Image (cartoon, rainbow, N blue to C red; front, side, top):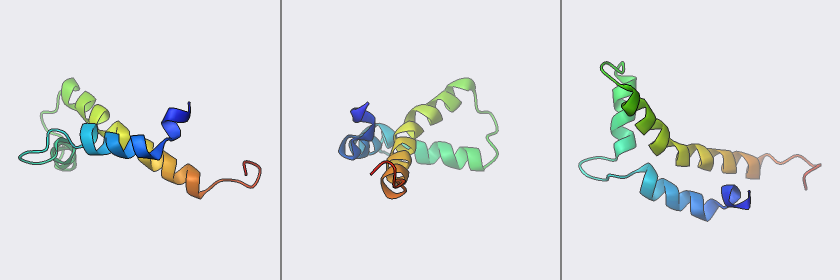
Length: 75
């Protein structure tokens, strides 16, 4: 499971899968605006899209959290 803790790979995933397609705006940004606007008319595929494009950012948050808040037993 070392691949899930590789921060270089996760940053690459955030920049590619997380933000693709890039034009006219990053896809995840558009979906988050839609959700914050009330998510009117979102279908299952739109929610799955949020999960797909948002998962690299969740992995990045997890890696940052685990690297910064290690317990003394794990060191």
